[in-house]
Amino acid sequence: MLKIINDPIPFVIKAFEKLFPKLSANIQFVNDLEGAGRTMLSDDGGTLLIDISVNIPISALPEILSHELAHVAAPNNEHDKEWETSFDIIFNRAIKLYSQDYNNFKE
Image (tube, rainbow, N blue to C red; front, side, top):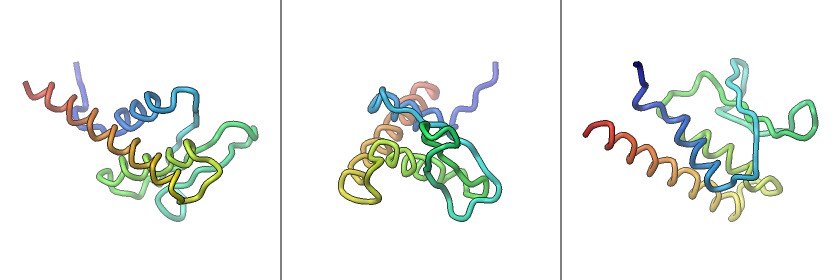
């Protein structure tokens, strides 16, 4: 069996889903994005769509994805206190989940 032991994406998604179980969004990686990421309404007008640039380093991915998911958690706010709180709890929970899983794998 193969397992990527340091893939950050599932941990960020799991953190978000535990913190905000009723919220949802679609995530896609895109080639032609200016900047690292963006969150917007999708073509159906209801589901939020997160675009993540394929050009960012993988080491930045947890922070960028947490940043965009914070916009899903605080959709009426740009980068205010509610958004900042959402970002902090998503990002910190993801790091905690990642650390626990990685330490379990090493044992």
